[in-house]
Length: 81
Image (tube, rainbow, N blue to C red; front, top):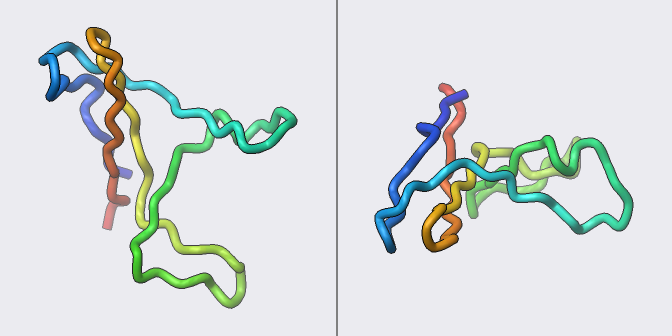
């Protein structure tokens, strides 16, 4: 799978942005996958699979936070072809 460089520059304050993990807090009890599985995205035209009942995954999402102003930016990562 492709990855995005580990640091970026903030578009608002030109500060250093570092990777962060966005945690899913939708479940009231701890689950192992909640903090370790990457966020995923799908395309708008995708449909639920008849067999699995799930949407296909177009790729993963990486999050970065500015150490100066606190801005969080999300970047899509396309899987290798």
